[in-house]
Image 1 (cartoon, rainbow, N blue to C red):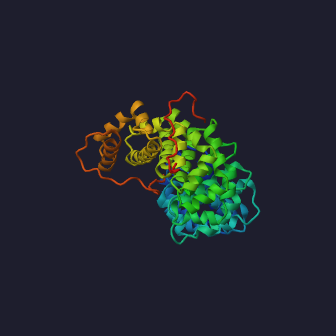
Image 2 (tube, one colour):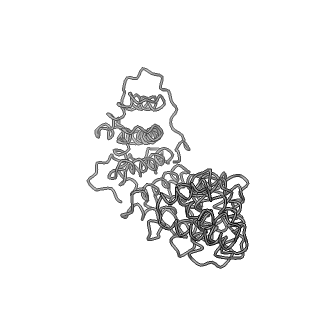
Image 3 (cartoon, rainbow, N blue to C red):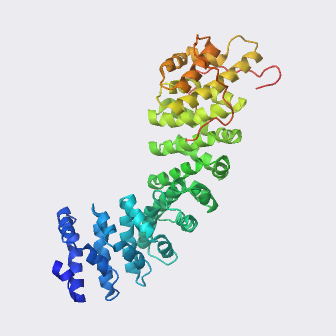
Length: 456
């Protein structure tokens, strides 16, 4: 077979290539190794440029596609096949175009260096041209999957993102789940790996459909959809407001309340935490959509990794919320689970939680003055429910900033003796970071009455 591949006779070359392709169909690694050792890959790459007979191009591309799906993808990427496969994306033969797309998709999927080789040879533009033609669903699936593989990671600056997003904005309306999932993953990769990718995605108008897809029945669709929206929610307040106005919050309330996979709920909490890290109006929108109730329930009842995501959402809201918003959070029973978050070893989370508790305690002081009371009701609740012990344990926390803020709260609200200089400013608006109903019998502190001057 090897001698036939190197023959000068075209018919013999085609016969040998078909034989190699059939040999690869057994899927055995030992067969793959024998073919690699025969050093015939450069010959198959050469056949890709043979326009006569066209079947030789097809069979050679097929062989290389199969090898690229193995552990030897890099050998295909480096044997001279990639520029020829890119040329075949413009072949007049639809079957050859499909096979070239498949081969390039396999190469790009293997490792960053392989993907870079494909991108360096300009595969994006001819690949996008495939979508402008009438294609069978199977071909469209392959093209969308290949596009998603090319978008993974950091796209080079010379790759134009907007034409890709124009195609993706159409693909996310597909009724085919495979196409839909790969298109949404491609969108996530662009938002995550391209500077300005979030704004480019918003400009492409993808958000209305993405929000609608949050109610899709398949978890295979939900995951890339909600992951894309989570990445968009990490943008600035203006970008976050776009998804809020598209109605994402009622959808998140349903996802958090129902029996969805944990990874979906984690992403939902991540979106909520990014929204509550924004403006007071955005925090209020979360409250009005009844999302915060479900997040508080998760903070009380879920597993640790999901609790952490819920804690971020509530800590951000408490850290940047208004007086009324903080009182709402306390009335829904957030204080005790927030104090439990102080046991975690996540520096950023614990510090944000402390900022939230600081704002809550400040609100308790205002209420104490309005009631002419000697007791801060929130400080008393934290004391009675073991939260003070968690604060005191932060004296041993291996982070100076967390330690100082914890000590400041202890000194200010519980008259603890503190020797260190902990004159930290109170938390301010904007200090938050981006990254079911409460049981009736749950212990809750009283909500302070408004002060005499009407301050809430």
